[in-house]
Length: 484
Image (cartoon, rainbow, N blue to C red):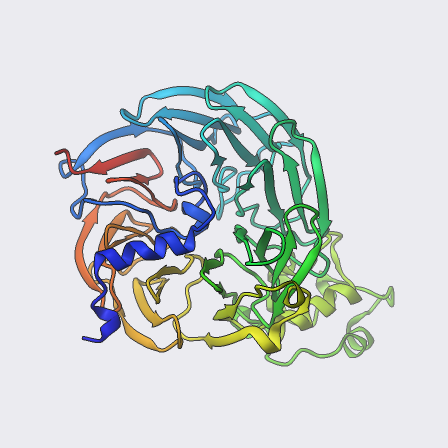
């Protein structure tokens, strides 16, 4: 066993402090303190089930959003497919009892898709209020008791699968990322009034699903880090000014960055063009137009497209939804074809002089490109970076070098995974789509402690609160903990 494989629980807790430094430790946003997925917890259970360490079970409607905790309340979003209505709900933290349920205001109809839900973004709370985003409504704020404070209508949106990024808080500022195929932006809203502080356009960015995180350098303003098409970008929280960026990444981002000390770890993966049935080399626009533009209107209809798979997946390439592919959209296809998947270790700029411009050539320390997840975000525990891939493939990397410490399959849980891993008390929790919750010893030479089967689908990332873990299935919210 390597030195990295003998990490003590006390050292494990140091990562939480480093990763969440200057940010709230409560599990008030997607994946807890600054999105790290690591909680300051103790005595968490290993065995979970209807008759194993169950504190309570609360029946709730479906949805992919995760539970967040503020004081003595839990907040969630759900939807009623038959009524096409989205809700925000408040539950009693101790008992799971439903305290209130509010129907979301409507700017547009609730969109029902086969690959996403109308309530996939996770709420964020400071304990006094809860802030939610709905594709059909925009941003909505409620008091902890369920009274609507304000509503900022947003939309309509141009994203083929619906939104996935969750809002986050930076003091009295609510930040929300809307990466879509046309007119992507990052918006900041005053939490007290709902007034828009700023809205920054993200040019050249197409649809993505990554939730932002915060970064406070030793010198300089508080920043929000955004993983999107081809780049990690930094914006000043106070003004929305784009400060620095690192490029060379995948064209679609789903997982969130992990900030720890003076580094950020960024993962992005999306199938390349051969992966969706297109040739590895795409002909230039002028050549394609000359040979396939039969009506000579300067653009390509579905029937005129040169590749059969592109005709089937036209929604991925027709960014403005007008039924044609034009020169600008072909340029995006070219860029996607040259994008690179990977997990990156990036040194964070700490001085004023460093925090401007392109840092790709100077600040990338290593890149790992094998066995990459599609959706789950990485998890960092004391210089060990964990990656969870579909099929239950778990990889532990040395976060300083990018070298593999251990890679293997989580036996008895070889499933698809949409929930991101979370950790506390020296344990990692992995929740598979079929409802298996695996508990892993959180060391480089990781070990399986248990595989628990809830027999209900899980798409939502669990939450950890002190010595309990909250697991959302598509029919209920479970609270597990040792009853003593």
